[in-house]
Structures are given as structure tokens and as C-alpha cells.
Length: 156
Image (cartoon, rainbow, N blue to C red; front, side, top):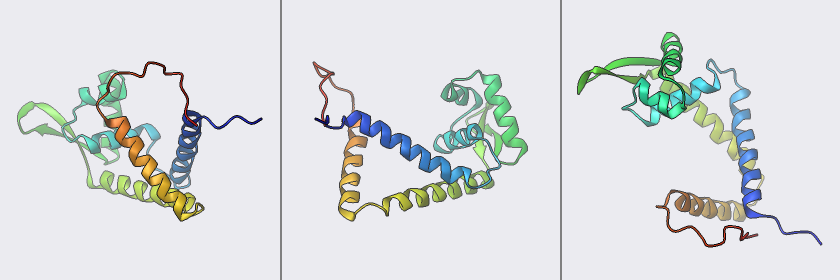
């Protein structure tokens, strides 16, 4: 008798498949930056107050490593260091227009790659997936409450 699929295992497998789809959207196009540099640009894009020390924390690296990453991005015209208007001793990391364009084009390629996969799924299943993903996101971002008494309970 076949065991029903484990939900957590299915989500993990789907996440791996999604990462593969997203990565292929990037690798099929010659990227001028490394995956680590793309991550830096994405982090800074979502956090306009970022300085080198905060970037180092986000990347879990020492500040000198984060600074070298910024040096390389600055050298290729994707990043600028600007004085913080509230504290001239602080330096903010700011994306250039070229970096914004790069991130937008990357996002568009990734969305198209995901849409190709979604188009292979029936519309009803797509709607079910949408509802499930929205519920998952809501549960994942909700304030943590008391842990379940038995975390070994599995739902198919």
C-alpha cells in the first residue's frame, strides 16, 4: 500500500523545483554579476537605509567582505555609496539606475519562467495553488504562537 504524500516533503520538493525554474531563468541569460552580487543588490533594494555593517549582518559575513563586494558592485556601476543625510559619518548603499534595471529585468525573466510552468497546470489547480500559497505566506509571517503539543503529526 502506497503511503500518502507528506505535505512538508511535497512543499520541500516544490520549493526545489521552483528554485530550479528561477535559477534557469537567470542562467540562460548572461548575467554580468554573480549570484552573491545579485543577492546584495536585492537586499539593498528592499532596505534603503542599508550601510556596509548592516549588509554584512544580512549576509552573515565580516564587514570587510561586505565592503569588498560593494567595491566590486561600485566598480561596475551598480552601486553608489552616499552620505546619510541624517548623519554624515554614516554611508548608505544606494543602487544605481542600472542596478534597478537589472533587477527589474531579472524579475520579469523569472516571472515568465514561472508562468511557463503554471501554464502547464489546469486553471482550477492554479487557483487552488494561489489560495494555498497565500495561506502559507500568512501563516509563515503571522506572529508565532504556542508550538503544537505534538510536532510529529503529519498532514497529507
